[in-house]
Image 1: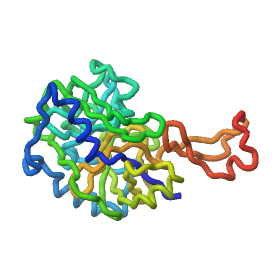
Image 2: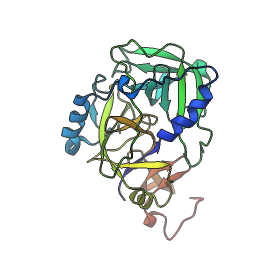
Image 3: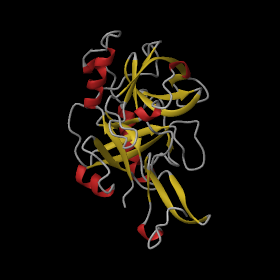
Image 4: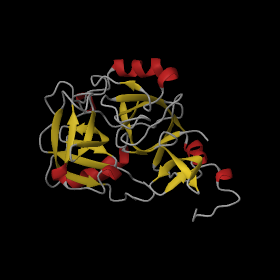
Length: 289
């Protein structure tokens, strides 16, 4: 089975969520031209390294200057997810990153640095809005907006990213970035990977029908995937924010135990499902073991 990254399309999700801010915040409605684009160096950097480094697991370190829109989402000062700056006062992340802890006093965003330990600026959350259709079991509509107390504006290495306003076709080269688990530890430095968008049909077949029309799938490059901590980060296609990392494939592996012996591997694909080979549990699918 091909290893895939699954992300939710955010163009519609953001429009739905924006109404929640209408009463107490003026959402930034400036034209797209006023929003900094993903730098040309980031696009060329990803393109030139696609065949060699299409991964975040054991991936390449990313320069924050090439990804100024990404910020780390911290809960109790621990970076648990990524997020993307979409206005001077708002960042977009995955709903599951904040669903179980919506205490805004414990949530901050960290930006302006590729390092989680130095050089960054802390932004304090003032409000969290989770998509009203978010399903914690299936991860549908896995998107949330975090409003901050102190503006993202005025920092050299922090910029907004425009939202995708066009259909992304199969085989479009996209990129992701994050501080997620790399197979050994959680890196201090931002990592990036290149992915290719695939069709809904390919996506559904690869995930055995677990995906929905609200999902976008992208195929990894060689020898890599995304893992815990990359959630909430951006999927960028053609220089625009196209999706929010929701869950992935083989990057996060677990061991399938039988009688306390590791017989097979399995991959976490949703909050309640792990994918393994049929022969690992056939002909004795005894769940008590």
